[in-house]
Amino acid sequence: MRRVTDAKDYIITALILLLAITLMVNRYDDGLQNARKASITILSYLEKPLSNIRIYRQALTTNTYLQRQNVLLQDELSRLRAVEQQNRVLRDLLDLREKESHSMIPVQVVAKELAGLNNSLTLDAGSNDGVEVGMPVINSDGLIGQVIVTASNYSQVLLYSNSLFRVSARVADTRAFGIVSWQSTGYRELVLNHVPQTILVEEGQLVETSGFSNQYPQGIPIGEVTRVEPGDGVETQTIYLNAFADLFTLSEAFIVKFQPDTTIQNLQEQQEELF
Amino acid sequence: MIRSENFRLLLIGFGFVAIQVILLRHLQIYDAESDLVLLFVLWLCTKKDRTTTLLIAGFLGLLQDSLTDLWGLNMFSKTLLVFVLHGFLNRTSENSFLIWQVFLIVSGAAFLHNIIFYFVSSFSGVYASEFVVFSLLIVSTLYTAALGSFLHLVRTDN
Image 1 (cartoon, rainbow over the protein chains, first blue to last red):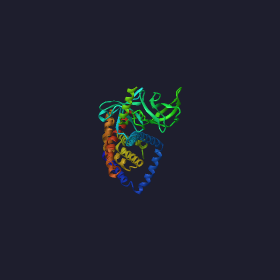
Image 2 (image 1 turned 90 degrees about the vertical axis):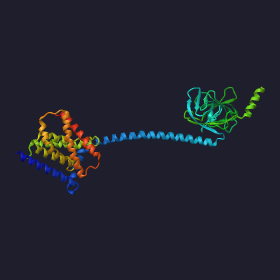
Image 3 (image 1 turned 90 degrees about the horizontal axis):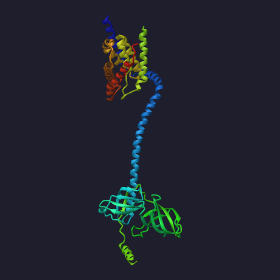
Image 4 (image 1 turned 45 degrees about the horizontal axis):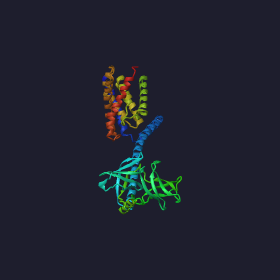
C-alpha cells in the first residue's frame, strides 16, 4: 500500500514539475499571453487599494532624497556666493591698485575690534613689509583708517570709526573743506565739520580726502553726504556722511605707501618755532 | 471529489497567496520579501499527507506565479521542496519546538526553497543580477524564518 502511495506521489510530483517547466518555457508563447493579461488585470484590481500606500512610501523616499539634495545644494550655493563675493572684492582691489598712483601693500585683516569707541584692526603686514606709522589704509570702497602701530609682521590700524580719528576732507567738486571725525552715533556715520554755511552742500555728494593735512593723499573717497544741519550759533554747518568702506565685512585691504612731504613738514615746524 | 477539509485548506491557501501578493510583496528588505505561502506549505507538511500537500503546494505555487508573472517558478520550487522535506517535517510534527528551533527549521527549508527557486529562475532567465543571490538566498531566507517564528509564537493549537 505504501509503495502505491509513494508511486502516486512520485507521479504527481513529476507531473507538477513537468507542468511548471512547461509554463516556464512557454511563458512568452501566445497561449499564455491571455492568461498573463488576465492575471495582471486581476492583480491590478487587487492592488488598487494599496497603490496609495505605495505612492506615499515613494513620496517619502523622494522627499528624503530631495531634502538631502537641497542641503547639499544650499551648501554649494553659499560657498559659491562667498567665492563670488571674494572674487568681486579682489577684482575691485586689483582695479584700485592699477588706478592708484602710490605704490600699495596688499594686506589681510587678522583681527578686528569694532564694538567700542577705540575701534581698531590688525593687519598681516608690518615693518618687514615696508609698513610705517601714519600710512593710510584703504580698500576699493574708500578710506579705512591709518596705521598707528607697526610690529615686524603685523600692524595696527586706527579706524575711521574711532573717536580719535580725524582726516582733512572736502566735498568733491566744491570748495567745502573740513575735518571728518566719528561721533559714535552709528558705526558708519561720520561728521564733516568746519564747512561754512555759505557753501551749498547737498545729499548724495561725495566726500574725499583733501590732502591738506599732509597725512593722506588727496582724492581717497570717504563717504557720501546723507544730511546737512546748520550749526547752532556758529557760521559753519554739520555735514553727516555715510562711510563707503564696510568695516564689518572687510577682510582685504591696501596700505598706501604714502610719505608726508618733508618740505611742508619743515615749514610747519619752522612756523611753530616762530610763534 | 475534493474533501471539505482539503477545500478549506485550499481556501486558506488562497488567502495566504492574496496576502503575499498584495501586501508582503511590498514589504521588502534589501529587495527581499518573506514568503507566507511557503510557511503555509511547510505547515501543511506537518499536518497532511504528502499527496495532499503536493497538490495544494503545486496549486498555490501556480496561483502565486500567475499573480506575480513568474510562471512555473514557485510551482516548481514549492512542489520539489514538499517532495524532499515532507517526510522530515511530518515526522517532527508531534514534537513541540522552541522558537529558535522553529527559526532554524524554517531557515533551512526557506534556504532550500530559495536555492531551487534561484536555479530555476536562472534557467528561465528571470533574474540576471548577482545582487539577487544575496537578497534571495540570505535576506529572504532570514525574513521568511523571522515571519515563521513570529507566527509560531502567536499561533493557537486550534
